[in-house]
Length: 541
Image (cartoon, rainbow, N blue to C red; front, side, top):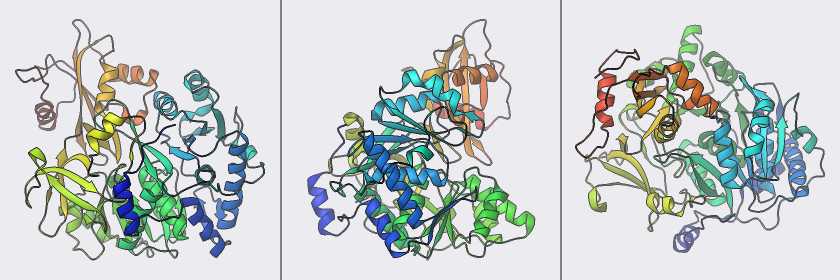
């Protein structure tokens, strides 16, 4: 696999400044284990807990299993697992041999898993036996013909039809790969943007570690902290800020695999968690649960919240149950780069998306690449030692989003405020952010346009009180047809589309508003949907 490489000029500058160092992620976690081997490193909702010594022992055996399969430096291993202790063992075992982790959410459907494993030429795939309503034994049977040739399949749980992680952990342990370097790729994280398929953002040990050091410093987090993660650790938030930041610092990680407000609040209380991070629905549900029982989380210092603007009412409702909310903003390509710092005024959490973290630059850029003055809206650019190297196998997309001077073009519209904070005001990207998860509308449109009853289709986001926004499919049906929401849902599921990407509302219109050149005016569609309570699927003009 050929990965994008660091720019040598920027790399030299970051090393000279001490931003990029020689440590690797697994070496730092092993150093944590050497300092406090009997300290709890991870616990999950099942009651399982692993000390640092036990984590290293299990991960080294998984490393040995992968090495015996011929998997090593630069090979990619895909892991589609929930927030379990076993998932962290898998991540660390992969990294220890110099291989590259490709964590993907359990919300991925068959089509998504097939796509990313092919794109990555994955050497192994880790899946549960079952989770929520998904039977992965059946999914693997359907998926098998679409997987890369020779891929090793492993499952976690009872009733597996393929080899299990538990069996792999009987292998002889392997030492840390001697050839591993801090500038080596260590993770490929897929993200949805304007393109119809997810893009794999490539990160090194150094790009990840710089961002986590900057975040930990801003929060004052160290080895005494206990992080709570209900956000998927297969997603950038949970993977970087939960697993990597916590374990390289020597702290403790508390994992919840299936979020529910009361359950999350109880686990945070039982485990004495000191900070957490999640999307606005998580915050709303936890605050509601605490208020209903008139209880508090005495150890919790901060709730970092991102993925969508945070309503003032929600911040104040959280404050009533003694939760301090801090807005955070970033992307898979540039994670994270602004945050409302603990010393900032409370209102910054609902009026801004935070100030840049130390060592990270932010610009607001107008037409022609000109920097705009404070208050004017333009595209948000960021640059720093935390920025990804590029997209896997996508040089043209990399060049479009990541310029020669190292600026990542977010496609988010923003303005700079007088105190140096930024405020995101909209998106150039055509995505829906549903409960913190990005959905490429073009991907869903590409699927739906092939439906036998669909003449034209657009998918747009509509506001949702809890999830931020959900998808609405606006379809011009072919003459004599009238597809229903159930029909298009079944159609997409049969294609392997993940459930979280499914439109949750359907409108049948006789035509779509267009410019004279034929470009569909999605902003007019959004306005009409948002200004109407109409929920039927009868054709409207």
